[in-house]
Image (cartoon, rainbow over all chains, first blue to last red; front, side, top):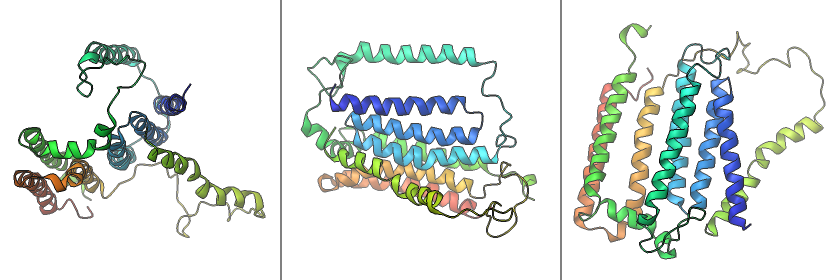
Length: 185
Length: 118
């Protein structure tokens, strides 16, 4: 085994074990803390795939912002801070079926489209190894992404639409989460 | 994986030691003479009332919602800042439009009073 494989196995074991804690802990607050560890593990997986920017974004957005929101939501919800809620409910069977189907679909998509992976035009990547990407692409990938975000030949329209989407999400979140008049004591 | 990440790995291994060492050393070396008052939960010097596993009113949760949006905005802007030397005038205007649209949202949140203690 190479060092990379050992690192990958360690990070995967960490991610999966914390994910199991997330779904089995009866105390939702502890589950949320374990979820932050899972996000950290996913960031580590991005690093093993040479996607440093994605790892940083994962840290910043998921651990920095979304986990905090999840913890706020748990703290604000009545009875969820107590540990009397069961960890499983009647839908666990359906959840299992959905999870298996989703995994199968993702696996199928990656398997079918492995020859059309855009970064590697003339290399078929076996599933066991990560895509072979030229070093110069990896080194400058953030700069290339930044340029293509705002060049008229590339993704400027999706980029501006993303801004409109974020604006809509912001306004919508404020309207939905705004306390109703009777809540204000 | 590039070499840079080895430093991150070293930090990941070493950094838990710094907060853990004082706690463990305190546990090993400190003299223990417990009494009921010492065993109480410390809450700014005030006696605690009831369980702490209750529903909280988090006052600034809308602030947190706004923060998520601008966190994502920062992720979008970082690659553009990295490519800043290679941008055209068209690119600068599209970034300005991006920021203007989100500043619009900030103005809405501010005007609505979402940045205040509610």
